[in-house]
Length: 638
Image (cartoon, rainbow, N blue to C red; front, side, top):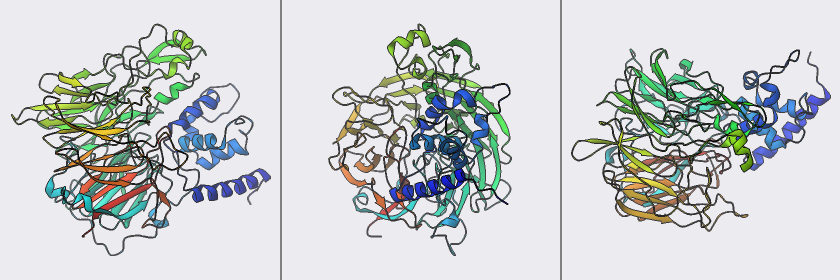
């Protein structure tokens, strides 16, 4: 017998009405919206992270194990209603979805809820042969994001004729941050709705779906199943630092391991297989940085790491942190809360594998607190692939630190961050690119959020060859997921500050552009400026911008780049002239029968395989426009 209280009945009616409103409005989940963790820290953490004698209060870990509806119910009609007074419904929703990693409303995320299950499609072909794109970049040993002519299956003459073939809705998603990968006639993609989907690459029907423990924003890698010829494994990580191995054809879980225990640890960059296919290289980041905005948070103790796993079992082979020392207590802020450091130097992007030197390269983000970290933040690291030993590191910007914990007012700085020098926040947000010169020598190319490009010598312990901002105009310091390199030129996405010098961490008001550079010298070959859009929906949004945040994709003769306003554009790699543009910030009719809407482009660039182009629309990071649609294009004549 179930006891139905008046409160639970009220909540049921309220949540049913709320669900109808969300579906009608095309709303999406905010499971990775950083405002959720900031609001938790500000309004909830002082109790849920404290130990009060005689009082039983669920810890953060216990809350994370609860369904979002239970957390939300507690704040709206339950025991925490009085404590949650003053919070808006949006704030409570963000807190519940952030903690649980799940949408407040169940959208029917699995294959069973979709109308386009694959029927009589046959088995998965060999994804490791023929045309393919199986990671952040087609080649993980360069991370150049360049697809060859044979694998791309289209050229500059075809691109103006690209037309939408199908649209697939990812229920409850808000950001398409997982690079779609293609091989053997199948497509795999992760979602911040906590699911991974295997689709048919041609018509988008669903082969299988898998529910992870937390949102999946990393890209997926495919490798052979050792000891089982003709079978393959899909590897990926989630936003709770869990790593998974699935049968690529059936979606059956083979193993799962947690690679970092810190409460804010995450795997958001792609996991990468080494050349042998026997080891999986995992980048570890964290989302602790925005938590420092709360003056009652003990900032900060997380640190980046590289973990290498055995592909058969998930057993750890080695693990090396970017910060050699664990954080220690430093000082107390104006609220009397202990602050720790050094911390940060998280890894947000895919590692680059260097078989020639048996090395793995990664780029790091800023320090989470303004103290010396030995040059770990904003740096390129080289580790021995076999042992994890640090080979060398090169910091690209000294004193790079977030100042979130220093307080909102200038007078707070001296109290909270006494005598600390703060550099600008300029993370290395993209994987290092290994470029081979005509001489056969190699250089390593690093790209920072400011669009600053640094070229290093991997044979001289990362010595800097040249470093430059590739524009005469001021560029913004956020939202750069990286350039592409076609072997001749480097193509860097641009986002400019406005006339008043406005800069934002994730969205921009001014124009965007694209610049082509010679990697060896940094000489600019051409620059294209993209006019600010004039056709945005009213009222005009600050995110109505042509600023380019998403990663660039290149094929012979063509460069694809995506903007904050949701427009994907293709340019001639020879002279920067526009070949094609498609605006995705609108509603779509989907093949799987679900409502879907496009939004900002700020994650991975397009995947180009066998005459088709795939990309996701939606990037809800600190206020940019959410979306939940995966789009597939082919040439109209086909």
